[in-house]
Amino acid sequence: MDFINEMEAMFLRAARGAVEPALWEAWWDEHADQLKSRLSPGYFLRIKPSVRPVDYASMCRSQEGVLYYFGRQGRPVENSSGYYKIKAEEEFKQWQEKRMQDYYERISPVMDAWEAFLAKHPVAPAAFDWQKRLGTPPGQVPGPCAQVPAPSGQIPAPPHQVSAPPRNAGSILPKESQKENKSLMHLRLKENMQAKIAPLARAYGMKKASPKTFVKEQNGIVSYLNFVGYFRGGGYEAMDYCICPLYDIRSHILNLPGDVMHGVRRKEMLSGWGVIQFDLKGTDTEGINRKFDQILTFLAEEVFPRWEQIDCLETFFAPERQALFQAMLAGPPDPIRECLLWDDRADAARPHPWGADEYLFGVWELLSGQEESGYERLARCLEQGKPYINQYREQGNFAIENSLKDPMKLLYCNAELFYKTRGQLGKDARRQAVLETYEYVCRYMRVFHKLEKLPKM
Image (tube, rainbow, N blue to C red; front, side, top):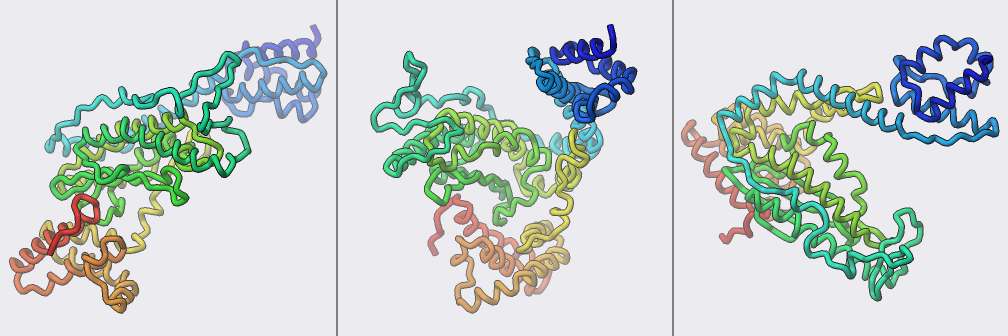
């Protein structure tokens, strides 16, 4: 058998997924010169192994090159096996797991320190079987939401129903149907919110501040979950989730570590978010149900268990917790690209544009007795906001009770109130003034966080 026959026989085996990477690499290396002389440069580059050692992802590319080769020869060959693709996905998953394992081993000292801290400050975990909430909400019945295929295989559209067209359809619903579609979408969102998100929030002690907002206060710590309404009157533009001290403006500083904010579950949740945002082409009921399943999974497995660990200000600001956040600013290497999976170090090095970081840590340092550094931080915060503060003063409404709908203005009002306690003579007097200011500020911050209504004076 001459080499052309041998070559094409090997190519056919590769097309069927019957050649393992090691054999393909050895055969290619043994016959590299012959292959180069008998194949055109285009064929050669399409089929040759792209990496060494050859892996299954490289075999997928070689297989595509082989199929292209036979197709151009007028002898099309079908890919009768998905073997390489399946093995490549398994291989990729193993690489990811190995990189994450190496990453966690590298930061294990700070993780161990944080775990040791938590062991000394145990918190009873919430008991809630959230997985039973996955799938179709109990309230969804055949009609405007779930349709049964007709014998023809097509789903009939009952009267007054806006059915979801194929997701690749380019046509937009007629204007007269868009209002009905909007109502149907709101119904689907409400069903999922009531069946999945609300029970989970209740299990973690959060109360319902509005149909789409859940809050909790515990020992000066606020947990806040809010689905942000889309400005065009559709569904939800985003989800705001934050844990912070009661006196904070939900700055998201020390909210969740990098492995959560850049993790797989959050990426899955954000992917295809538009299905619950707004759609002029029809409401995708199943898509909405799946998206809320992903939201529920992210909250139940990643967010709430982390928040549950934070039961007081001392834990929120614990050096061990801050060290963990610092260690997770940079992620593990990307298994495909020559970079890290995430790198937030540059963002973390930049000060908050409003000086919210100085306010957050400045007040905590005052509360914990570190007067000098606390007042210095507050001074830097107020200096940073000086142009805005002057503008507010000119308007004549620079007061905490007039700032509850303006986070930046509220930040500077609070910072100034705490900074003014510096004028008290004597350490004990300043300490008492700080505590009184804290209580006064928190009365209004409960309104800001939607925990209470505006206090009566």
